[in-house]
Length: 345
Image 1: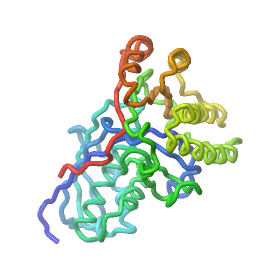
Image 2: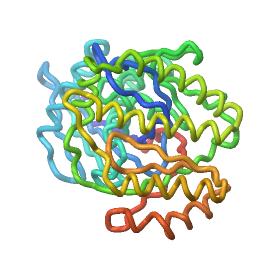
Image 3: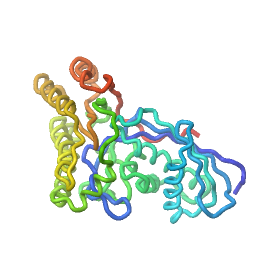
Image 4: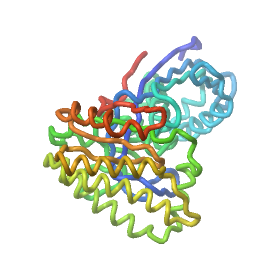
């Protein structure tokens, strides 16, 4: 093993969940299964310079968009230490990690999913390079990502990925996500996602806090059953190219997520009045034109509008004509289903 500085770099994108993961237990184990679309443009680029360390503890110097972030560096040290329990090779290095996002902060895009999956892909590459992982196995990278951010485990795959044990998805697991693109109809292969930035303010309740509130939620058991039922119906829609059924389940999941927040103890509301106005206009336009499109929400007020490639022109015109006025500073980010992580170095 050489003492010279070595470098690796990866780009990984965020994802948008269709069936939502909400609530967890043990070490980042999901309360229920979820399925998502990995995006293309909303990505994080992360590079790692590493060399032989003189100490026994992991040391990380972390820079985000050129600025040192020691508090996040400490978080990454703890993250690497967790992985090093299974792969002690990682304890032998010190790290300089540089990261940047292609999208602005607080835009309804899960930066933890893109950043932690990009970081995990770098660590996975280091382990592969030095023989600690014998053959390519993205489930290992997915499991590593999960330890940093639950939803990140889905971002190591292109297109559609399922995380959480489900009897309808072969190979599905609570500790890593699995790719399901072979099952997806051509109707959904080039799905677009236009992200309507209704409000970019920091959330009053973090996702971590929201997940914790599910432990004693009065609807916990019914939610678990609902997610399994919805995943089954959604997979049938994705396999059959059924936008109508897809829309029904995806929008139900989005509204259920926020209903769970509003009915937790303590309860909280992350929706904005303009969120509800945009949803109303989307439904009115869809009913009037029969245009295939569906909205979804993450744990915040911003709307992800999903639609097939052949409707891109009509939907973007609708956004510009009717919806953009309800967006903060008229801000909309256009994205689409992506090809998964890309090695840069």
